[in-house]
Length: 448
Image (cartoon, rainbow, N blue to C red; front, side, top):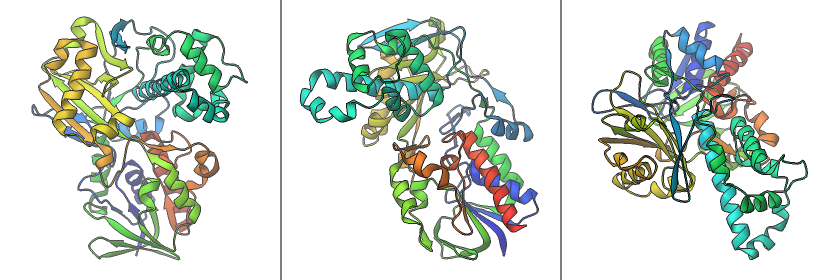
């Protein structure tokens, strides 16, 4: 009998398996896909170069994943950020100098902040145009503005920068300031998006070869312990674990670690059944809705204009972009995200329509050269049956404070790991690595 069976060969599952093997325990990793990495994935372009369709940025404080990168002999590269930021507001594109000092944001934080400002401005517009809605939602509008910010901006960097921008525009955000008062300020004052443009720099690293190279390196070390194309359909977890695969095969182990996101985890049959609170919490932990896409150009033409490739727009299908061109590449790689409502809308359209929508967005921000893309590649993570959405899950208000800390608590011999179960860097690759390390230590203590 195995010591531990692990469901999922993403970062958390691979790290947990590695650590357990290093402790002398017998493990198996069961992965439904035909590849390792989970929400980390590389894709090849026509010229043989690669882009990262999933997680790719490593930020400040992400020490656990950086340690793994170096341990496996991989190196990191920066992401080009020199040049001006483009901000498009009310149909007008403006080039704004990048911030020369102060704390820089990661691309994920920039995207988070951009989407939060968009939601806030839409509320402000509704406040001005729909008195019936205002009357019906008066109690909700009386909530603390800072609480709204914490709820709608999920990254600390985006929350901090919002506070800086808001203070610069309207003065300090007081303790008793309501959402209603904040929306009135926004309707009467300057565009927050314009003031956001003071941040043009980015703070991140990428793995040379992609984070997928790290996952492949760990999987190679694990060898035959990693089994691909093996979906688990049932988890029995009483005194011991018995996993039933889609093929009908069963795998027995003393313990089991599930690295599936909450919503996917509860879809599996469990015996005994999972507690009601866990299923209810999973329903409230919505996966992110993102289509990650790349436009490839003969060269990074935006640099000729003194631009960094980073942009933020208040409209269009793709509202944030980044230059992800490798230092040794002649071609230009422009990354963009279809997010939220736009992702939901364009997911039901053709690939060509999404390509054209991205091109249209690039033209509006960077000029006519944006129409000269020679290649397009994308990944709609919501359409991935074994993923169900990306980046990470979004905890509805009150869910993390009430259930988040215990989501990782074991159910008998069933343990949990993954980005959504981490108490630190929740939703990040760093969180997945730390969670994998922590659960491996817990399982080892239970077995040895």
